[in-house]
Length: 439
Ligand code: HEC
Image 1 (tube, rainbow, N blue to C red):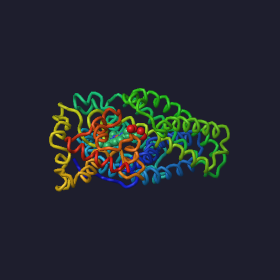
Image 2: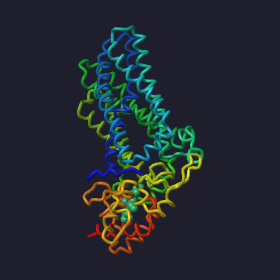
Image 3: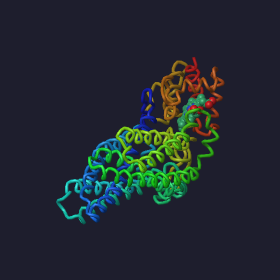
């Protein structure tokens, strides 16, 4: 176990969620935009329309700045945030997929070299070579998506990995294919939205209309393909039934409607820009991109809900306690050991004075237990944004230590919460702390 990162107000999980949701835009733009770009460039050479190059140059500069500055910053941000929010989850990911990440990095380096070469060799190399550089970028960017998707989907649905612990069993998991093609579809939605914004700034009216129309068609196709695979992906999620059963709060119930609503608005926007390219102005274009951000955040929240109570499905709980055996990797469940020793002894980063609970340290020990076992999903402060524990205790209506202790005893009968792990005395300390929150 590691020290707990407590983020005031937001809670560590929301920090990860905000950075990761934002990162979807630049990363998916990076993987999609060059397919569009190369197709326009090809047309420019084939039909001898040099005026199209003006768009290509601007579009590549947008990708360079947005994807390679903000995308890289937020990408590194995800690593930092997830590493401190859930060190053991990331550790499991690295231990299984270190060569996967290494391979992905090779393709990422090819992308970086290719995009700079592409941008700085306009007019300096022959057309065929320039197109080839663009194509090298497009292909290597998609390959990096092929790799990352496998690793990310593994955490949600590890599939046969849970039995074999093998790289490829986890990689080609039950949600891999639908997720890969869902991302592939939607990445063209994102490429199209950016292309429309960039085209809106062009001086040549014919070029603007041509690009906006072409991007609208790509956007419609991408959105339809992405949506179809999104439905498949949802169906492939083993936790979907579990989630629906436990859904009571208003916001989680709204999330799927937000996603579907945004998809419909986007299709309508593409239909408008297809029919009336002149309407593709800067403001509505940027508003459409902003809508994608909202939909992404909603979809990610849905996925995170489904993932609960685990960070790696049925293997590691969100609070980083390993809840099941994985004989292939010589790992055993930590629950029996924690129940026997106590979480305050099991976890190394506990102040020595709190390890053995006495009447005077009961409340404080209870708080430390809540930090270790509950704060991955609940902020401890009442004004926190992430299911604040004081509100939850009020909702459950517990006012006595006995009631709170009973509730803690059957936490895992809620489909989205891990079981309490620790001794009876620790359970009591947590109960005392919980009751103190309901004042
Ligand atoms: C894996 C994430 C996760 C962890 C870890 C977790 N919870 Fe929860 N908890 C939830 C979710 C999700 C809800 C439902 C919130 C809602 O309905 O909006 C919830 C709800 C609750 C409720 C309200 C139950 C009700 O009546 O609806 C209580 C009380 C609670 N949690 C206590 C705890 C305590 C104490 C711990 C630590 C021992 C803990 N939780 C750990 C995810 C978690």
